[in-house]
Each structure stands twice: as C-alpha cells, then as structure tokens.
Amino acid sequence: MMNCPACGHELTEAAANFCPHCGASLAKLSGDTTRVTPAVVEEFQLDDLDAVDAEAIEALPPGSALLLVLRGTQAGARYLIDSDVITAGRHPRCDIFLDDITVSRHHARFARRTGQVWVSDENSLNGTYVNKTLIDGEVALRRGDEVQIGKFRMVFFAGQD
Image 1 (cartoon, one colour):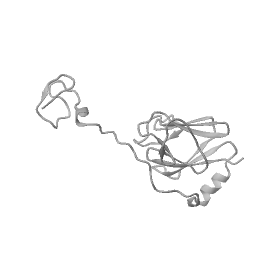
Image 2 (tube, rainbow, N blue to C red):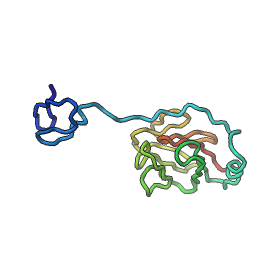
Image 3 (cartoon, rainbow, N blue to C red):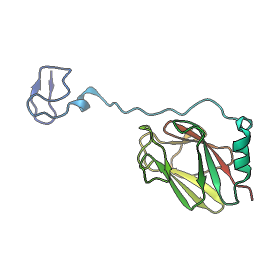
Image 4 (cartoon, rainbow, N blue to C red):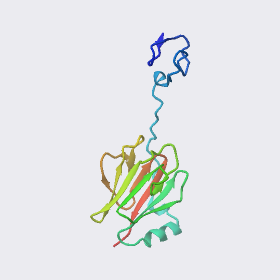
C-alpha cells in the first residue's frame, strides 16, 4: 500500500495520477520519466558535403565559423558564429533556436576567444556532446567536429585565415 507524499492519505488505487484526498500529483511515485537522448553513432565524412555547403564553408571570413545541421528538424540549416558569444537552445531569444523538446531552453554557449570557438553546456538536461562525448566544461572546437544538442547534430567549420 502506498501513501500520498503530500497529505499521507492511504492510496487504494495504485494507478492513480492524483491523490483522491488532497489532489496532489502522484507522478513522482511512479518513477522518473526523464529520458536522455543518446549520442548519434552514425559517422559523418567531410566528403559527404554537397557543393553548396562546401562553397559556403570556403567563403567563411577569418574569425568566423559555421555550424551545419546534419540531423534534426532543421537539417540543412546553417548557423554563423560571428560574434563573441552565441547561445543555443529552445528559448526563442537564443541566437541558435533549436525547436525540439530534447533541447533545454538555454542549452549551450559558443564563445569566440584567442582565435578559437569554445562550446560549453549550460546545465542542460540532456547534455551537449562533441564527437559523441558528453562534455563537462568548455571544449575547443576544431574543423569537422560534431556537436550534438538534443536531437540536433551539427558539424563545425571555422573560417580559414
């Protein structure tokens, strides 16, 4: 027999979602429903780029970078990193708006400094991956690195000096 965590009322119906006595949610009693999106395992090769994407990458000005979305609802989209801080997340005010429930509102941050672009996770639920590895802290990105935010898989390209 289970008891309501809010009022202590003895629950007779095990499948109830709410306490019949006080109305408190019983969702926590049934277990955690949080799901982590695993990193994608399929490989990307730089040779897989089409001519239009390759042209856009070659045209990048020095000091800028490009994220090319390979997977997700915005596959084919390109995001230019041309300022010192770029935010990515599900919040409409993020610089890179990734509209999917697997993405936290303020998921990741891209920062330009010392001639490199660094990515860091902003305490998101599903984490941020670089080259299929969950990152903890800042990671410097190199040409061809894969960045995964939720279901979105992107490839990083820096402008050539």
